[in-house]
Image (tube, rainbow, N blue to C red):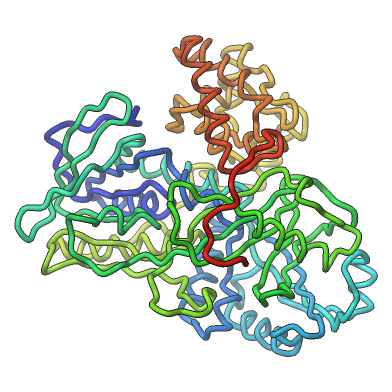
Length: 551
């Protein structure tokens, strides 16, 4: 069931394929500059790669190693803008970078890199880096292994704990600006007439109804799936060379740190993280060549063992085993295809906008891109769209435009007032603020209008029935998975929302027009959707994946 229905005679300036963070950001930017936009996705917003990241808004420190100063500058700028435009979703995130004997990046080199980064980030960060002696590490992080420890550095980056909400707010803002977003609508083909691409052929997943979206420009922003969109219709070299990244989530463990630890893996020199997240810990990520099915990306046994072994090495008290893993998250990064690369870390994390003209006028493909720089990518795409359309350049508005959840002149004052006046517990109120920002008021309004919507649907988080209703009525959710995994986020708890699922489905029966049969089907479908996470609660027997090599 698409979020909106497309008419057969749609003619728009811009059709965007893919409602991940980049496609949504393009829609928002283009609509803000006065273009008529339709976005099409065969699933929910942000349901692909956008929900499988490390949840970090990187200033670009890692890219200094490859002398990619353009990407570092862009990342620093975008991180700074997100601090201002999405303060409810993005926050300062200190991380300790320990240096051990035998590391491929010696401590002095890391400190030099941090000093260079601090200069580039002048006045656009939340603190400068500082060296931490072995003695101070032992005092402040006593459970960190001191075997071969040469020192450490404390670095300030940023985190977006709920990257899914970043996508939802881009959706809301794009719609507010006039863009239409068709979810659960499959692109069955491009409309190719001679050397012109004139839009999309689409099919409503629920009804099977077929129609067209005719557009002056079509942007292929399907992430790792960009080649699949072009296949058989547009002659093109291979564009996507995405690598697989997997993370694991565990409960607090003996010796667990209270800050992010960013360290070099002993087995392959890859920088990896162990970081606190919503009362639990995330370890990640891997970076593997992946040629498997893009719709069946699952963390392999080898990846899970690699992440556990490296964590146990630097936290000797942890003694984590595969049975401690609550669930895993795996996705494919939308990276440019690079022939014969020996080290996946060397593949560019930047983005390019490929114009397929003159062979295929009116078609652009977005290659690459990452969470941090989604807004800059969208600005570049819209600039190119305006150029191809022959329109005068129009000023980009998204550098200053706040996200819907930050639509207030003083975010801190709003947050304090909300906590003070909310009828909920402090924990529930803080959770609403971090998910919805100023839109948390809307949750309370719904609960006040109908007291049954003040019911708690998830004991662990204190989430309310009102959030389920808001997710569907006002935030584009269609399925129970959309609600739990990408709107109210209780699906990322210890049991992945399985205990909350029946209560949330019942809310949909009572308030959203679902019948009992649909509620049962949605709960079953949700359990099936969770299998790719290999959740411990389901004791899944998912195969160990199809990686070409171990991490």
